[in-house]
Length: 140
Figure 1 (cartoon, rainbow, N blue to C red):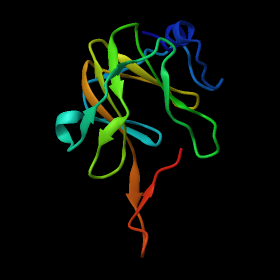
Figure 2 (figure 1 turned 45 degrees about the horizontal axis):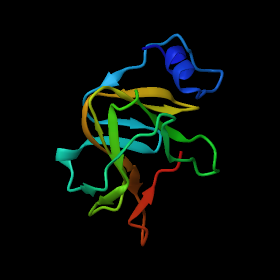
Figure 3 (figure 1 turned 90 degrees about the vertical axis):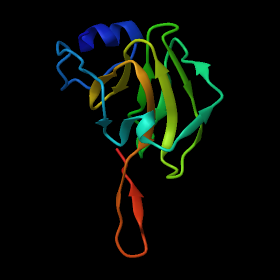
């Protein structure tokens, strides 16, 4: 799928500097988009419950530090279930996603990335802190 097709299908948009004729990669493994990282669930200690269907309009998983530039998860109707009721020992998980078809993370500055079918934990990224600050969340 090309970025232009995905944007037409979802009604979302990206900034003008991005090439809309680029093919959106669908990745079957670890991937990052800005301040989010997508990890196969079996690689984490994350437990999940309270599953629901992804709404047709998608869902904003997180917004940037200044309230702009949301990371929005979108999928074809009925192909994805998710939950935000997660138990994560590292307190970084935002959602767990189960998808039968590729789902897409869309971001105004980064464009889009596809997530291959599977079960995935979407987490915030963190970086090592200094001194008494042990870890700092990455802000996009």
